[in-house]
Length: 97
Image (cartoon, rainbow, N blue to C red):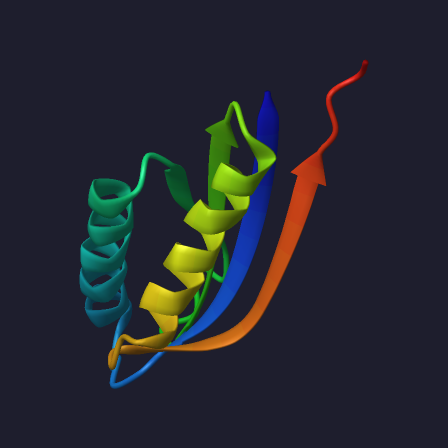
């Protein structure tokens, strides 16, 4: 079993309120969850209307598959026009042998 967690720091472009931010994040998290079998949650900056941090977790039998899933999500996020990716951190959970 291979598990990886990714934190993605975002700037929500054109958000003028928390309501605007929530609308963008709801669409974004639904798109990610539909395209990939992952868990997604907002993990930081809930009270700021132009910042967000998403936590994304992926599990697979193959390490390469987990990396491909997270790479695809990063690529899709960078291609969006409603958010700017400020930073990405990926952590792998090592299974004991």
